Picture 1: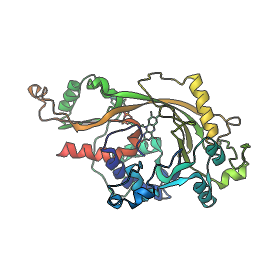
Picture 2 (picture 1 turned 90 degrees about the vertical axis):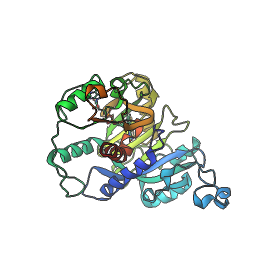
Picture 3 (picture 1 turned 120 degrees about the vertical axis):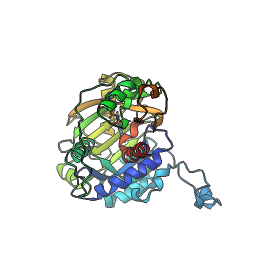
Picture 4 (picture 1 turned 180 degrees about the vertical axis):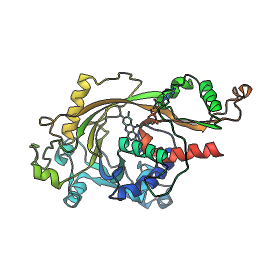
Length: 357
Ligand SMILES: Cc1cc2nc3c(=O)[nH]c(=O)nc-3n(C[C@H](O)[C@H](O)[C@H](O)COP(=O)(O)OP(=O)(O)OC[C@H]3O[C@@H](n4cnc5c(N)ncnc54)[C@H](O)[C@@H]3O)c2cc1C
């Protein structure tokens, strides 16, 4: 579900990433990726209606006025555009821990996108990817990957593209892939880059206390309920619980529950504001956490490296030729906004194609 990323290439890159991580999610021995149900609350039905279905071009994918995104057609996601009532019926089988559906309906959410998606445990995955490089062994299969010399702790913070080229020349490299995220703004004088600030609360999944959403007064849940139900990810990006700049969401990520959020372009405040924290606690309560009975283990603020179009291209500015850098190819690979983990495989493959072409 690409977020805060408007580049038309992301749908394909997300599918290539899904190809890689979906099998990991299905493998019960692998804890890097979990398959989770997602409930995204909606005020209106945005899918095709009867008029669309009978339109001549609908089944060729040309007709109709469905606002559903392209990724929703991927069968692996089991996507449904369902009413909350339908979700409640299905939940008698799935037994998911969902927020109070009657409260959600009272707030005006009568519809939903209900689907299953792999969720990457990002810190664990980064460790595993690094381990792959260092040991030369792939985590996803038993293949040996190429023998590479890896050094991620260089401590070097490049001040200009020229410094990058000088380093590459010294190391006898013929390609540079620039993945500096928001840092590219200064490194490449790329003024299109914007930091989209996000603030989150992180709860420990094992000790986090839950509300019993089956009662309207949301009394704290008993411990037996907690064990029987399965955690799901919940999103409310529409009012009143959420909005574009202040989405409400809960993501189940490995042993953590992440509650968000904000998406504020150009806001550079590095720590959480008190009023922001109050709102996030209210989000946590709406999503089913008993905020009187447990505390988050961490407050977190980060900056999404947003750019209208992701920069994944060969740098063909020719001002390096005279400096004897013409044998070194610079490929830029940054600006993923709020979707870096959704598209990382597809985008890395594209950058590799550009290096090799
Ligand atoms: C609150 C929040 C929630 C998010 N939620 C999701 C989500 O649910 N799903 C999703 O897919 N994505 C999500 N993202 C987005 C995702 O985290 C980013 O897209 C991704 O981390 C960007 O990765 P990157 O490697 O391009 O950049 P970064 O992770 O920023 O890495 C850039 C690296 O380059 C280094 N660097 C920068 N400049 C220089 C320099 N001049 N010299 C040397 N090194 C340099 C930096 O130190 C850093 O290590 C979220 C982000 C935030 C902030």
